[in-house]
Image 1 (spheres, rainbow, N blue to C red):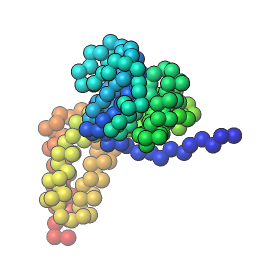
Image 2 (image 1 turned 180 degrees about the vertical axis):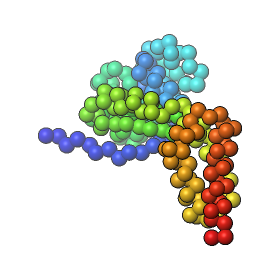
Image 3 (image 1 turned 30 degrees about the vertical axis):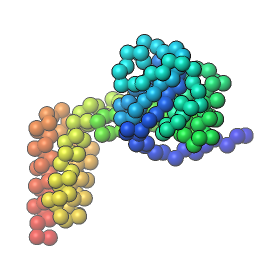
Length: 218
């Protein structure tokens, strides 16, 4: 029996990186869109391009057959052509050039797989079954979408804005640890869910003051 890969979980920083998508259909459009959201500079190569990709102004579309030189200066490539033979050709060329490659729906040809994910601002939650049952990963993702609403984005935005000031102003390491521990407590988060940004900031600042007083003179 063939040994299945054990994946090493990692989040890639593709900001400003040149990334290639080979294919012009709906799947390729989704992959290109996800890369753009992560700040990548995306090039799509395909002789046929669907309407969704054709309308995008944040993607460079090259309407012709793929060629190996398209991998020049690329950080990663996603093969999403629907043609297994072409996808395999892209994957082998990428491996020769040491360019990270994902082949849609074919983990065996891929250097990495793309998990089912939800994004709430700075919060990114990903789920994978290592290719065993992608439908289950999608099902779990839907549950997480209900659990983690858009209000988490506002919450983390404000925490992120406050974090540097807290690190600079609160010198006691134990105090800082308690502050951020309180911020991460799900019961506290539940108590402020639905509050506006101004109210959220006031509640967070209240926690900082309470903890700072506790450690004063300690």
